[in-house]
Image (cartoon, rainbow, N blue to C red; front, side):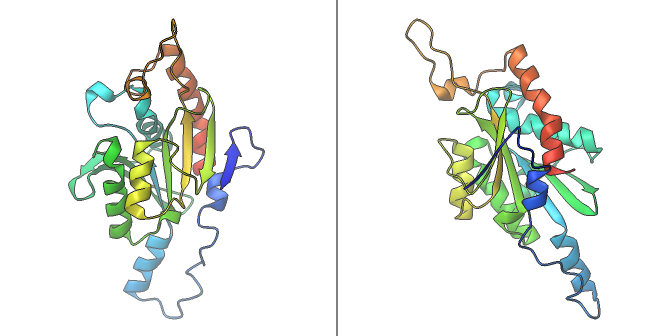
Length: 221
């Protein structure tokens, strides 16, 4: 498992390592055809998936950190507004950066069924799990920090667990945004499933949003 701390001196960790084993399609085609251009187009693609729950009642809950992050990325890079793609069971925003087509994705399946949308996207675009980055909340990481991991277990995150189950592998990049554990009060601790569905406190949301520019540089320098 690869794990990269948020303070790593390695610039653009995800963008450098994503597709590192992929052969460049140009040079393999002696006489380009319509079909070969389609293949080139698909090879130069990244899918960035933010996890969360659809609906206004969940908009600023801790479990929707992934949605909030891809919303920031869309605005930061001037991509198209999110639009519902019913076939993919997701809202999708598209754009290009550094010659690559980028898809920003928010599954509309609710968190525990996130793998359904991810599987549909990979099948449609004929991509592999190595071509995606999944952004999500993480209880085990301190608020205001994040970690990048490759090929790691879900660690209790149901959305990630469903993606791993549907794809049959955990070999994909994840950006894990820290939300911390619930605080014990008078010997009583809130259950995690209730904690993640609570709205961020103002200071928590500020810490989270301050991470988004760093995440943007990691993914799309």
